Each structure stands twice: as structure tokens, then as C-alpha cells.
Image (cartoon, rainbow, N blue to C red; front, side, top):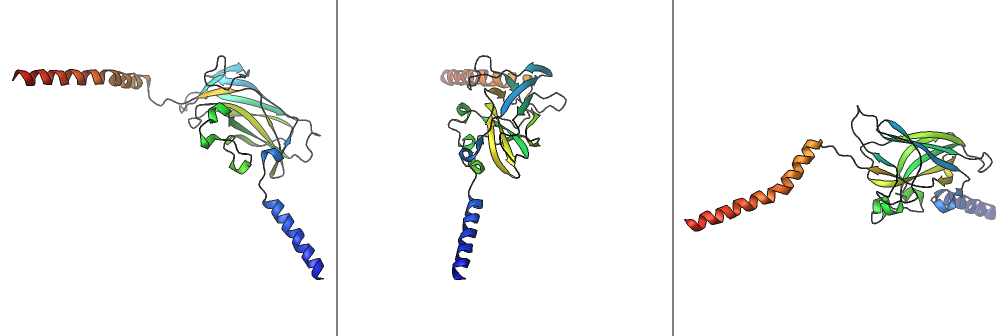
Amino acid sequence: MASAALLATLALSTLCAAAAAPVTLTSLTPAKMTISVTSFMVEGHKMAGKLSKSADLDAPGIPTLQATVNSNTEKDAVLVGYSMPPAAVPGVTSTSLYACYSKPSAYDRPWRQANDILSKDKQCQIVIANGLPPHQGNATWEIDENVPQATYFVRAYSLCGQTRCAFGNSTGFFQVNPIHNLPKEVIGATIGVMFFGPVVLTVFFLKDRVIGKTR
């Protein structure tokens, strides 16, 4: 009886330890998943979803979207599609899509760094959509004012119940530029003050010195 109780306790401890173990990216199945940016919406116009091989900011030819807060203006957006053979990963019940910082955009920024432990990962923290169909679907990510400047790729997680069990990444990168809340007139006036301010102060300083010497 004591041996049976001990074995049961050990088995329960093993199950609890397994349940408490963090889910890591390396433990997931690299799914045979195709993730593609099918198109972009830029200033209300639909553009082909051709991604850049370079992850550098302002790389030649990189698709660039603009963050906005103007509710009267159609937001720039990324249209993402994904597909995976049903037999590739058994037990998949849904799919989640995330926008992820590229390595150059995460460099020297701890708040954007990748971590193999998914609960601590900060590279892929921007949710595009949850609860999507398991094997094929699409989603639209609208670029709002909270999206920081960076180059991005898209990651899909396959969920088996409530647990991530597989993943796939898009190939290539796109860029998001930060929002400018100030009107162009205010920006121009600010630049003018920054440029001419020191000149005006210098003139007044020299004038005061000259007047002081003549007294």
C-alpha cells in the first residue's frame, strides 16, 4: 500500500511539473505553414504584398506604412494570409497571428528582445488576430497610433486547445513609420524657432555688450 501511494505521489508530481514547465519556441513544431502578406493598404490604396529581404529601416524598396490617429482617414493596413495542411500538426484547433520586431529593430532594446520562453518573449507581442481557423485563413492588421517605428515580420502560432503547439514565420519584412500628431505648420514653426532662436539670442547678447561698453 505504501509503495502504491508513493508511486501515485511521484506520478502526480511529474504531471504537475510537466504542467508547470514553460512553453518554449524550440519545443514547438516548425509547422509546414505558408504565411504571406497578400497586400497592403497605404493611404486608401491597395498595393501588392511584396516584402523586403532586408530588415533595415528605410531599406531600398521596403514596403512602408504610416501610423495614424485620424479617425476620418483610412488607416494603413497589412493583409495577412496563412495556410497549413491539416495533417501537418494533429490536434490544431485555432491560429493566432502576431506582428514581430525584426532583429535590427530589436537590437539594444530589451523591451523588444526575443526569448525562447514564450511567456517572456517580447519580440512577437503585437496581436494581429486570435481565434482564427486552424488550417487556413486571413486577417487584417490596421496600423494605429500605438505601433512603434520598426521593421516587422509576421508569426503564426497554431493552438492545440489553449496551448501553442506549432509556429511559422513569414519571409521578408515591412516597415511602419511613427505617428506625427503635430500639424505641418506647427512642425515648421518649431523648426524655425530651433534654427533662429540661438541667432536672435546671440544678436541681443552682442548688442547688450556693445551698449554696455559705450556707456
